[in-house]
Image (cartoon, rainbow, N blue to C red; front, side):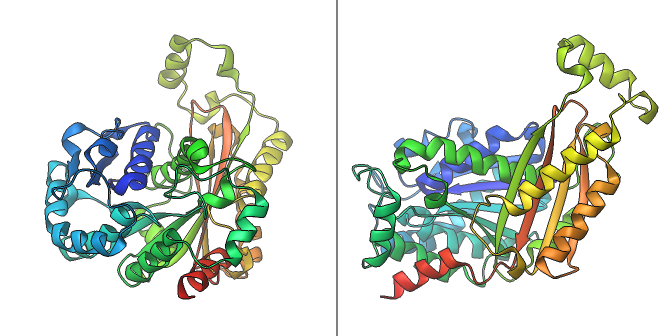
Length: 383
């Protein structure tokens, strides 16, 4: 799948950089970073230098001024979209605009850029948005967040970052095909500030997102029995700015190649392509590994806290060493997921990874509305 990842603003650029770093083969992923702050822009070291662009004649950021961010976004949207020709946007299967909600630069420019991309290209435009950790976002000097402080802040009048976040969500509604959300507050550890946890959170989110798009139209070494293609992804994510949340987990498994050197693994890939040459795996053990991974991905922590039974549709992908991908267990997991959300609008697939040492499961829930965390933000932004 050809994916264009576009980070806008400080947070968006850092996350786009992390996603690009997590792609095993950059040939199918192009990354861009757009910011008004040149110093912040240089932190996106994985993104090619000629794919980073400072717009507007400024020194430093916008310091929370979303109104100014919206003005600049409208003014420079055409310029930003034109920078994408340094890649191959006309071949893109999808665009992913990455933004930190609460920030003025990304939050202001993202809606205008999404609109411009929708006009120029036929491919869907998705938004990856991080929700602010109230009391820490935009304020590096703020004390570490605790459960008590978060609850106390929730009862207060909304902070500027919360107001910015709700306003940006309103502007994106009807423009983006879907909004994949990540709640910073839910993923911070007790006593941890956003500045302290930022790198870990960005890597966690990058793993979820990179896995999602990597399994679509996977052209890897092993052929999937049930492959997920771009049409499947569009069916699940939708085209009406639905909220999307991701669940992901890995289950380590013992493989014959763990003790082998690089040369041995290369020979295995070259000369052991037939199913009969795959290492034998106990069926019960394989089923247990797949079931455990699916259960954790479906019912464990998601990028945005959700009520699965209120999801409108879902996608399940299980990947790992081919010998461990028990088809019956995957089919059962798909049926269980359909039962959980109360809908037959569930797609499933597999993603063989010959060199992997873990079975992974990825669960995508779309149309998760209402979402308590988003409702809190919207309610706070209206007071």
